Image (cartoon, rainbow, N blue to C red; front, side, top):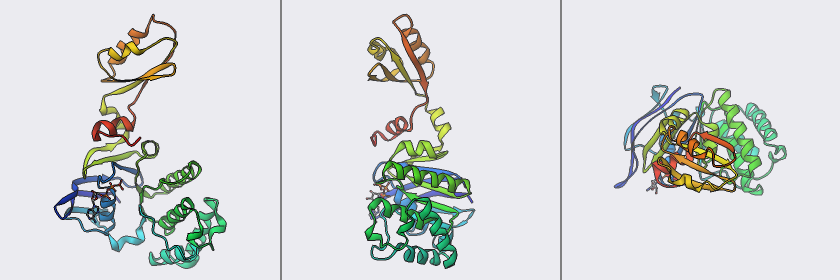
Length: 299
Ligand SMILES: Nc1ncnc2c1ncn2[C@@H]1O[C@H](COP(=O)(O)OP(=O)(O)OP(=O)(O)O)[C@@H](O)[C@H]1O
């Protein structure tokens, strides 16, 4: 069930929010959707879900149309959380699952599983407004997955959660993938994307500037990082040809180099100068790639 976007464009008046976006989102994987504020991520999600019509281009799922009619196969965690504050958790989640074709007894069983898993079994009969923001988010996540969708779209699923809940949600996302769910999520946190996604896309002004397999993206980026832990001042490395960035550390430094060959020169420069505790040649981080392609950092 591959999700395909072909030349998808969305205009709001004369403003182009998404510009000829072509993407292939492989099934049963976790796909990361990155981009600065306003890059077009939520707009793209809304078009996939059929909540917005695209101005041009096609969106297909398993070579057929996708949208409102498939809502029983799709789960969506919207960026602006949308539960009814006055309703009890069980009442509204069971109702929403029913709208997506799930019988009441099955959805109650599933809800119990998720509330236990998220360590909030006693929230079943609480009104949403009685819960903290982070816990409301867990309930909203449950609402997106309760009906066991094949495709799960998560808009900023980890924002506003404490580290324990982030871990809990990440584990749930990985387990869902392993049980065959295709997942697309947007995030401003590069480390979450690096950890979870095999494929990703970085959007910039509605256009993909990076798209593909994470491993391949890193490999083809060329630039690499070196981390040196040494007992002497390493600042002189800043002026070695091929060093594109230098960052001092408490004992040593971090360098960005133009390509892997430069590492040999750095190694030569270090030898004989003193005691080098560690010398690590590392892949670029997603943050390095994002900064280069989009010209800004989240952090
Ligand atoms: N209904 C609308 N009418 C007019 N402009 C809109 C509308 N919805 C979105 N936009 C504009 O489209 C652009 C893309 O917005 P979108 O919400 O898709 O970005 P995003 O990547 O999800 O951003 P964020 O990371 O801040 O959530 C923005 O410039 C936004 O102002």
